[in-house]
Every structure is written in structure tokens, then in C-alpha cells.
Length: 424
Ligand code: DGY
Image (cartoon, rainbow, N blue to C red; front, side, top):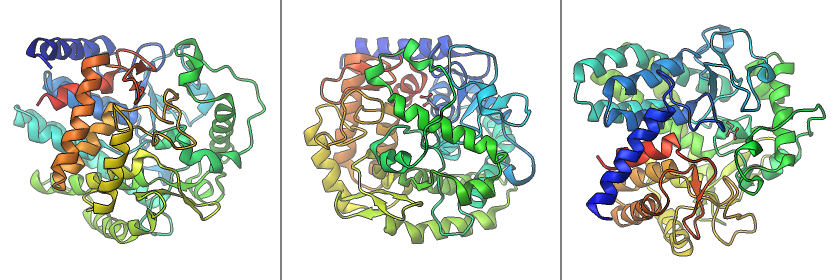
């Protein structure tokens, strides 16, 4: 890539974040996603820290305005915080029907990237005084969020937290959830999707998917958001290897940050949960795929679908030499990797959201993990793919792994942020 193209992309990325800034939080992209999303916010803050440090910390402060503080759900951070009204998205706050909080939120969470992104931001921040001040405020709230995950999503202390909604995995329509979701009834009430006002239907989840995820949203409301009932009777309960790895890595980073900055948190239960997870993840290994896989808690079966979530093992610090061969093979098959579903799998669809397309923030996490585990050559290949996509197509929501064409939303915040972070 020429230095001119590099500078142009950096200018565009900064302009994208500025355009998506709503005065303290960043929308993923205008229209399609008009609120603040949890894991988007964490990645987007990485972009802000490269050129506006005070603004980067604000992203977390705004996300935490939606944190729940009461009873059994203490520490919960929602996957959407509805800071403002908007008619351009379904489902909005009334659909979720969550207890009255200000701002209103959804009733499910999302992959808990926060502590890791915060630690990376701390390491890169130039204004250490400001960073320390913000972290003293943010880290205890994130510690409560980790406690929420371990307490409500692993009530039997197995070491593997469960996920109760495909939207909670962040990788909504990954083929991994097909079978588990097929058992969930379809919602019969009328509703109108808004996503198709913004994006071609061939790039979005199907109607059947929406009917079932709406049913799951309504189920949470019907049981009054009781985490015990959800964990016991929820119609969709899976172990998502990606969430397990992301939470594990984040707990490592949370404990390290608290230690380094002498921030008081309730560390002992987190350490114990962390140790349980490290003992439990070998059960997620899929010999068929040569990859860490997901588990269906309702049927008890390992979900043998070739999806990219398992490649976050390195990010969690897991040495996975057999998986390195698998990733190398995937990269041979996809001119622009890492595809979200393996090219050639029966379930692969090059354009449909999480059933094939490449997501740049996933590439960033996978690459970082590989590098930290000494898999330098593979890390370089993933980075080369990411750079080729940025150069060819700019900052889309996701990309076709075969052609490199940009798909989904445009001028996308976490994609722009991933570029800025990669530039160092
Ligand atoms: C959507 O609406 O597609 C989001 O991914 C849900 O969080």
C-alpha cells in the first residue's frame, strides 16, 4: 500500500468516527444501528485512543450508563444502550421491555471485550494521568460485569459460561446456532424488521432467524429477566467458545490492570473462575474440524460447524498447534481471510453476515492472539488479508472473503477503529 493511500485511509477512519459520534458514544453506523452497542463500543474506543484520548474513555463511561445495578442482575452490561430514540432500528426499547432504566437497554449482553481493550488503551495512552483517573472509575464496574457473567451464566461453576441468545454471541446467524435455534418456536406476533430498509436482504439474516430470535427476546420478558429461570429453562442455551475465550482473556487483563493501578476489586472469585475455565476448555475441541467448537447445552452435543470463533483460542493464551494447521488451510481457500465460516462448508454463504464474510475486528483479535503465542507467520498472513481488504474496500461492516467486496453497513465504526489501531 502506498503511503498516500495509508494516509487517506487514516483520515477517512478518523472522519468516520467523528461522523458516527453522538456526543460521547459512537453509533456503529447511522441508520442501520442508531444506538450504542456493547462490543462495538469496546473496539471503537481503540480507534479513538489513537487520536483523541479523552473521547476514547468517554465511550466506556457512556456504555456504563446502561449498566444494571440491582439484585441478581447486578453488573449486567446490555448489548444495546438506547441513549436516544430512533425509528430506524428494530427491536427498540419498548420491544425489549426491560425494567425502567435511564437510558433503556436490551436484556442480553455481548462478548465482554472491555477489560482487554481497556488494557491495550492504557498501554498506548500518552496521557497516563487521565487514563489512570478514568480506569479507577471504569475498572470496578467491569469487574462487576465479569462477576455477573460467572455468576449468572455459569451457575454450576463448570468453567464455561453459557450464552442465551444468538445476538448475545455477537455473531448472530453463524451456522453454529442453526440446530439450537431450530428448536426455538417462531414468534407469532407481528413486527417489522428495519434492517432491510438499509441493507440488501441477501447480506442479512433470514426471516426464519428473526422470528426465532424475537421469540427469545420475548421469552426473557415473560420470565421477568430472571437469570436463574433463563439459565435453567431458556430455549436457547449454548457454550460459545468465542465468548469463553474473550471472557477468559478479559479476566486476565482485568486482574492485571487492577493490580498495576492498585484498584480495589473483588479479585478472588474472578481468579477461581479463571482457573476453572482453563481446566474446562479442552472439552470444546472438535477433532472433526481441528478447531475449538461450540456446545449445545440443551442437546448436550458439540456443535461441529467450522466457524471462526475457535480461532480466538490464541487470544485467550491457549497454545493450539493443531488449530494452526486448520487456520492455514482456511487461509489458502479464502483470498481475503479470515472467513467467519469456512469456504466450502455446506453452510458457507459469502455475503450473508456471519455465514462467510470477513469481519475486521475478528481478524484483529485473531492476529493479536497469534502474535502473542509466537505464531508470527500466521499472524502476518491474517494482517496481510486485513490490509488488502482495507485498501480495496474501505470501512464496511463486513467483506466477501472471495472477492473482497464490502458488504452490510458502510462507514462502519469498529472497522475504522481496527484500521487506526493497526496503524499503531
Ligand atoms: C442486529 O440487529 O443485527 C444486531 O446484530 C443485533 O445486535
